[in-house]
Amino acid sequence: MEQHKFKGQGEIVTLTITHTTSDEFNDLVPYTLAIVKLDEGPCLTTQIVDEPEKAAIGKRVHSVFRKLGSDGEDGILYYGTKFELDK
Image (tube, rainbow, N blue to C red; front, side, top):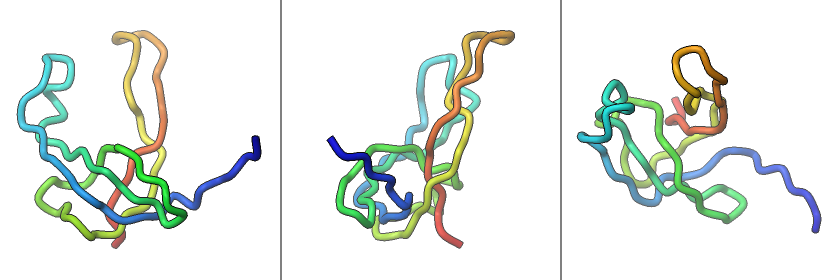
């Protein structure tokens, strides 16, 4: 298997805005989940970190490093990739 590093740039193919969720994510709503087609071809499901009303099919996005969650108030923090709209 050969490693490949993606540029982290792509386009929103489809999206949904979540308005209700479990208690642990209440402080995040509303938030946008999207399928992003990377410039290299693969598609992935990701969160768009901008205001939901700004996201739209066809808009360009790029990857950003963000907090994904934690193990409680004093536990380990998890970080990973989300996407934001190009300016």
